[in-house]
Image (tube, rainbow, N blue to C red; front, side, top):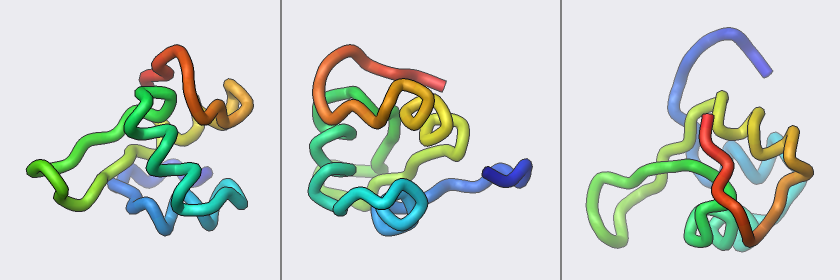
Amino acid sequence: MTTTRKALTIADVATLTGRSANVIYDALNSGALDGSHSMRGGRWFITEAAVDAWIAQGCPRYGQSVSA
């Protein structure tokens, strides 16, 4: 990934990892991928560091939380 720090969207993470948006939502909702959203039902934002950590763990969909 790049060294530039920016928030990524679900679509960005899906493209970077080759996973579907549903897999990304599942990972976020289960805590396997660290992310935040501004309000309930709002848009998710994921850091590049969180994506790097998730990839390093094999992109788990469910299970133990992976934090940056």
